[in-house]
Image 1 (spheres, helix red, strand yellow):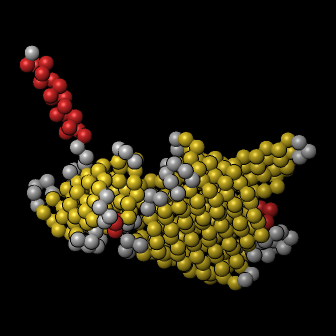
Image 2: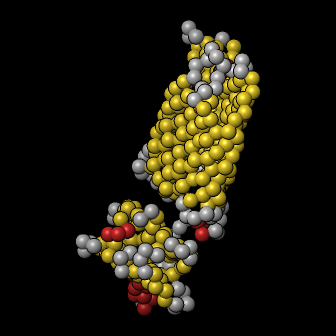
Length: 337
């Protein structure tokens, strides 16, 4: 009989222990939230609750944050601390480690809470996308179009490798109408959280514009404005050596300047993402090469993605009888990781 009484008591006790919230947030308007800290990134605290899902809270609106479980804190001076947290961005954060040590962090020393492992040198972050667009027209016309592009990036705490490749191959009545590809890679070394030095190289070929081969390579300096889960923005300028081999013009070698802009913004993890990428290489008005891709990306389930994209190119260095401007509209299916 005693065991029958104690079993529900023990079950109730376990439920109470299990249901104790791992963290509490007190906002500056007096509202109190209970749940679990996911992370602090870009001045936004992501907080998981049982009653409202994931909340995004302005870090400056937090009057007090208290956690019952350990979190990892990355400070502005690149320290990595672990422990229970109590405090606010305005009054300062207190971190209590497992051995009982109390560490005081005054504002604005806390840069992130629960950062990704690569940010603290504990892992390497691989990411990438592989997209395909295929069109077959079997009516009055007999056309096939195949577009392929990929982006692969490796990110570590202090540096980044990135590789991009694009291929377009079109036929009409079994005759080639487009054969075009380009590849580019870069290595970025971060001298601070946002400032980096880069080494870039690119190769490209466009058979029907008379471009046998063009390449450029050289150094650049860049600035990473944002590098977050839901938004990324970087811009860089550089000086390059460029070489082009055009059918009716021969080979031309020159020094050039250029820039690159890469941006994406995710409105919500379950909805769509907008993106824009552009590159310009300029040595003279007669030797100008501009490329851009702008689009919307939506999840299709699992790691599969769908995209609607506009590609806009302007190339002053082409054969005399080819168009310098090119605008392409695409619907693509891809896989992201």
